[in-house]
Length: 405
Ligand SMILES: *Cc1c(COP(=O)(O)O)cnc(C)c1O
Image (tube, rainbow, N blue to C red):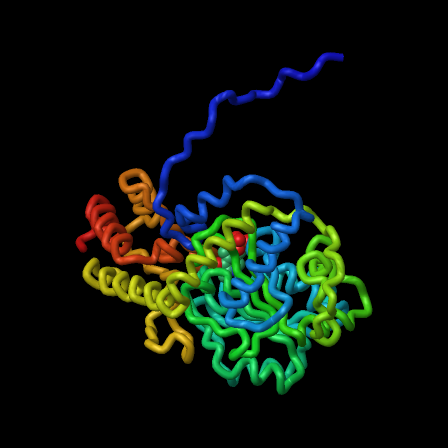
């Protein structure tokens, strides 16, 4: 028997184009973050690596604005962090309410039904968000042990108001799980002040980092629930108990206490060291600039973009703009859905931007397919220069397609 030679093999290195990524993610890597990807490999029991792990966890607490001890990066895309919440926080038979008004909130629902809970989908039209009364009614009617929602819905460009939700959930003895994948590190978010119990993001959106590494945090209420489970978590890779034995063996899930001296870390899976170095660098950049400056830069870029859209006779799908990002729902500053004008094929414009300017924006998903463009001004891409470039490129593309700007 000889070895097979039937495969069509390439022998040349990859030459990829350089793009300006102004879609819903990924966004471009910051050069310092990029550099970390080629760092020298270390073993997963190296003391130096343990130090990096601890530093990264503390940096993530700043990102989330939390004191939660259980704050770790999940090895996987944002969806893996989503599944970590769902798999650990739902026990068979638990009542769960999923608030759904877009593609990603529906993904949480799709995932939740696989974990044998008693899942209720509370649905509203795309482009809307939930007010406190609706959430109160859902809590009273369905008596869930877990409520899930998306803070920044990338499919619609909506930012859910967080005012009062955490308080309500505590009154109803319900855990609150929030997806902040497209928003964290771009839009004000206060995990502890808003009494959020489970929260996660992804590296590749507002953090200007690589995909495949996803910060996650659980409150002590959440870890207490996990410690009290009667059934093992049905997903071994994402089992928080096992992950905790590697990331923070000193943490007692049941009561939130810290065990001293720290028990030995236990191998669970080989964590992607270079992705963690990159994430650490993204977070160091965040600290250097300061969260409030970062939030303001995103907001300013968004407002510049809205103004430019007006000049082009285009309009965002989500009409309301609130100045106070932490009070009311409204537009998500890091991601804007733009209505495609009548008579224009959205795909042609996207192709024109890519071919002539190397700029990537995205089209709509689900209910918004063919109706909107999705423009992300995330992470280090959220700046005035990129906004001006995009507006000029859009004008060029629209004019070439017969639209009078
Ligand atoms: C991008 C995104 C996700 C999924 O993240 P992946 O890294 O693609 O798995 C989940 N939720 C929201 C709101 C997102 O924008």
